[in-house]
Image (tube, rainbow, N blue to C red; front, side, top):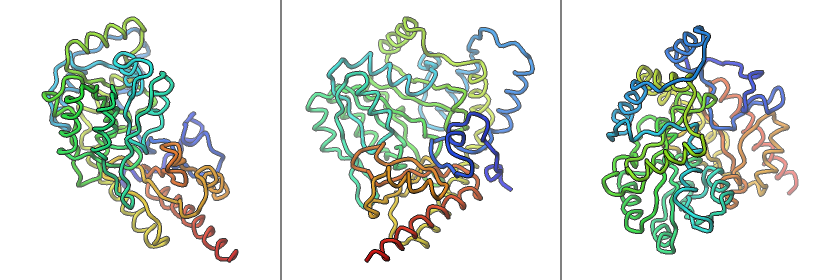
Length: 390
């Protein structure tokens, strides 16, 4: 049996995904996986814990070397140690950049449907949302460059890009990334690229990082993290990559003023070991996620042929259109409780997508099959009820 098909009971561990739902409910909600971390990471953490002392910690050069080598091998761009700013999490990085490089009332561009904190970070910091909606062509999503440029012309100061895109699973092509960077440079827009899903590429697809184009625009920051890749979100660690010397100095100055940023000794160790020793695990996970996606696609197409959903190129998230039910996402979420199934509400990612759901595929095959079975039963029951009413 594959490492990724081993069922591990996460209940009783203060797990957000499984300890916030009732017993018997199958949960496919928050974007973490149900896989044990690589054995190398687990062994390194156990060894360090056995030492028994967890005092103040320095960041070893070997940590930075691991991140530098990972970026070069996996993403194809070169950085130096000084370009890496260690953070607690990606959202902390984005929040800081919003406060340093925009002012109250400034417009920030995002691409709905998109990760919900992008909305709250913008509005919560008294900035104005400039919504550059992805074009939805029968669940194939693309960027509306004409509208994006118009948003820049209208004075937007920052663009928060989600690449790969959560929730639709889109990977922006090399040509798209280059065009985005050039537009940001042309209109002097600060580009923040959230690339936390960049290692979760569906097998056979290719990711292009904004980091390949630092030479085209100097007001850019990339947010990366091992948390999604290796299922260590609870350890809290991210890396903010910036090459502009002035921006780096300003960020570090304010991190010191606010006494934020940094990571724990265990998260630093986990990241270093994962990046140095566990690339094989990432490749295996990509194959597993492809297998899970194919299983879901084939099963849903067979059982509910008219059902529409995005074909993800990345992430482990399936974006499913249930608007044909003529129900709100909230109603669907409530209905699914009767089927002992928990998923994410589509309207959290954009009001226009009320009636959609997001389904997490990062689980053992047996768990996925049971979850899909429950979803299909719900959908078939809805159709049966509709027929009976006619």
